[in-house]
Length: 125
View (tube, rainbow, N blue to C red):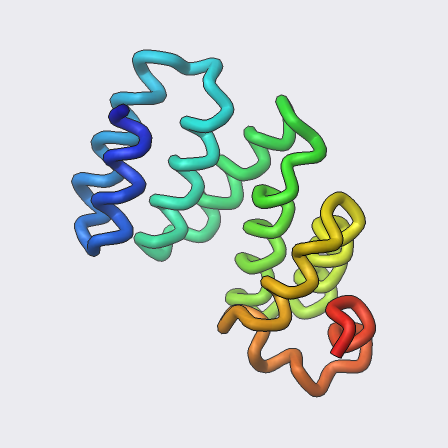
């Protein structure tokens, strides 16, 4: 419950409280991969991209085919301006779950990629 509340609180703008709640969830159940994912998302919402990426990577250590953690890393690289890594990770996410194409095509993280030939091929534009 703390993990979900933390994520919801962060989505509503209070990322400090969101991190506190997700950390409490992690402390209570450090092997729950959902807690790792929510921790990654809360840090991402707070703008702590390196810490967010570290938590996405922790998810992938336990669940290498976790589509949304792979996608989360792609968005971090896109936000940081590392186009090659962003597209490499986006491609990995699409290979795991082709429905990621539609999400990638619409999200702001990849807006500046809309004229990029590789991006267009990946998402089917």
